[in-house]
Amino acid sequence: MLLYRRLLRSVLLPGYDRFRSRRYVERSRFLEASQWWEPGQLLEFQWAALRKLLRHAFQSVPYYQWKYRAAGACFSDIRNWDDFKRLPLLTRDEIRRHREQLCSTSYKGRLLPHATGGSSGVPTRFYRTRESYDWRTAARDRVYSWSGLHVGDKSVYLWGAPVGAFPKYKIWKTRLHEALLRQWTFNTFSQTDELWSRIHADICRIRPASIVGYVSSLKEFANFLGRSRRSIPRVIGVIAAAEPLIEDARLDIEQAFEAPVYNTYGSREFMSLAGECEYCDGLHINSENVVLEAGRQIDEPSKIIVTDLHNYGMPFIRYETGDLGNLKDGPCACGRGLPRLSRIEGRVLDALRGADGRIVPGEFFPHLLKEIPEVARYRVEQKDLDRIVISAVMTRELSRSSRELLDSEIRKAFGAAARYDIEPVEEIPVLASGKRQITVAMQSDSGK
Image 1 (cartoon, helix red, strand yellow):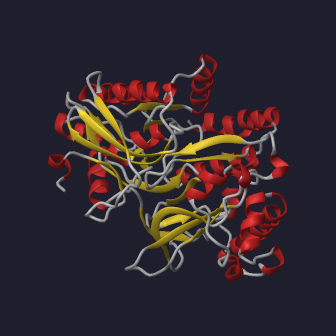
Image 2 (cartoon, one colour):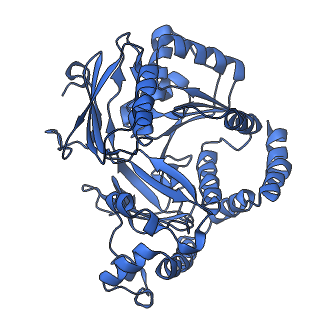
């Protein structure tokens, strides 16, 4: 394992970077060193990167030029962190309405489209650059390395699958990429004991170093291992992603996998934002890649605001993520200078069920609905085992292709007999519980 890891890092990945004019290896090596900088040195790097980004936004991003001028802000006024934090926030609604005007005029033809299901039922479609993607993947891989999982080590992902049909060349490209990195990805969007049994057999054959997964998928696999009295080969760690990790779930997963669980925090807009190190005392923020703002009051979580320091094609400056959290004071025992989050409160996603008993993680619907451009906001509720209602604020009537995609993916996840209705609404009301909940299970399942 160590020999292949060295081959990958010293020969294969640098060769790929040179061939594709990429800088992943360079960014990765930088982040491996910079995590040990003193906090003051990290702040200096952040401020220099932020000033460069802001100058670029003021000079070449039409929407920021208009927005900041209307707010009475100019680049020369931003002399310190307090000045920066007076800039108005960027919202999902602004991105939806002004996406093209948020793109830099100097990056035309070099932007990669992307989308997220949103943390509050608001799909967001945006652009990123290849340069920013190298920073993001390097930051994610650094976070994973804190659990002991390094690039090139065998790993299993209990994950979702892309929706819709893809050309064969893209499928083979993905397979080649995963084979090179020695990753095995299993689609857990439709969970049955038969699926878990197959995954268990494959894990016993693969013998991965680590397992990465949605929190809900890890929890359901842990439940399967418990009730079937099975175990898996020893892993060095389990990495929890995409959903909130509560303490009870952490303990259940650790007991079933007989390995420590490492919590991570990220979003599709930025990929990896933070993660736990070996001490699991707060989540270290990838502060060389983002500026993350949050309060420090322990009893009162505040809005998490993020600025992406390296996506020059469509800059996210003081973006309101929709999540809540707190910064943690004091240094970590690991010695890293990176700031930390003490806790995160994200979206609430109930798992739903098919008529045959299969479990569908709530993460399925954000993953699917981000591909439906006519849906501006949504909430999904399961009324009974064979009926799902999608309340949606629509921008226009569903196209034939969008309807076909919904039909095929929902039946793939829930079974051929699954029924769903789309109910157009003017707004999505807050639940009586006060939760920011975008998938809601049946009353008998959720206990609400």
